[in-house]
Amino acid sequence: MRYFLELSYNGKAYHGWQNQPNAISVQEVIEKALSVILKENISIMGAGRTDTGVHAKQMFAHFDFDGEFEEQTLLYKLNSYLPKDVALHRIFAVQPDAHTRFNAISRTYLYRIALQKNVFNFDDSYWVKPTLHIENMQTAAKLLLQYKDFQCFSKSNTDVKTYNCNIMAVNLETLDGELHFTITADRFLRNMVRAIVGTLINVGLGKLEVADIHRIISSKNRSEAGYSVPAHGLYLTKIIYPESILL
Image 1 (tube, one colour):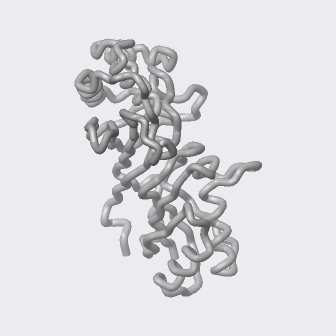
Image 2: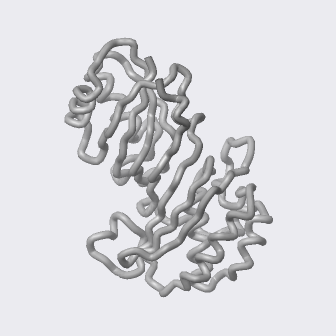
């Protein structure tokens, strides 16, 4: 039987989602918890590979298990075992071939930029000290919707067959002293969101013009785009699946 896990985590203490040979990952701690409680070696597959320090308000993973368990009881036991920065919210049965990575219709990321010094959010958002021209950043962000190939925002030397991504929505708004950038797409390239945000910040600082976005994307050159903003301001917030994966 295949099951989906819905979870969230604070990525500060982890070297990303995926298992690492010499560093702790979110995948590792969840696999250990499942294996101990179900008394069987359990491997999980996540919906994506968040980088070191990136958070997830909503993440999914799947695993296979042929034994029996009561879902709410297992959920309680797992949350009691897991560290305080990883929480499981749901366990539910799915179709045998359902896949958390390949069946996802869309993913949404949020990046939080602090607009003023705040002693309560420095671990959760990226403080940009100079004043930003937010209206220019908003205009530049909307230009992303005109393109499909985002090689210029991809980390170099990544093993991908295509740099095409279908961006479905982008938004940039101020909220409680922060600037929140949200983006939804069918897939994301490695480091893509952090590179986009760094580029938009350069627009906000006047280092780039709004129209430069066209040139940067057309160049397909990572060195033309802006810097990669720190990981601690990035959150995976939503993943959508078709209802057909459910039993």
